[in-house]
Image (cartoon, rainbow, N blue to C red; front, side, top):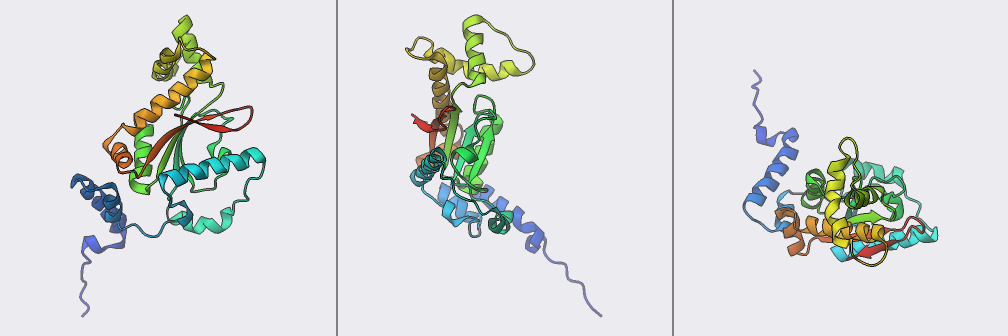
Length: 246
């Protein structure tokens, strides 16, 4: 007579993702370092080994990609052959908090392929609760070493905020919640020389980069341990060039 032996729940294949998540959670509560928390998850080999970079190397790769984009020498990306590896996981080398503007596509601007960028987009590229949580996931679970807040020239969301601050303009629906988030940047540069819109866009990038770097224990600790760099960029619609904003 055959005996049925129950497989302990902790050893079932379906439990493995949950077990890894619990290890990450347990490591975090024990106060382990960022690197130790990642090893605690027993992560397999990265989907794209070339994406395992230091924060500085990740930024250099972004800027070189933008240079290729400007020169019209973008690489031919082999989506078909990398699809099997990416179906099993991801390890993007940069996270982007960008504007929803249809004219600004980070994957094109930095000449990147699938699995390279972890992108959040919202009008005005402002860090809210959900975008912060999304980038926390990129850093904590995917070991992403770089986050760039990417603003762009002629941003309509910032322009609307200027009209609200200077002229008392009002907007329908939920738009005021968006302009409210951008108001500090506009007010900070009202009396600065130069173009008000561009100054406000760049100030908004700075404020949101600062906010992300200190937004949570996950992000601030990764920055402190030099596992993460948070920076800002400004995309010029006329040229396609991305300049760093500090």
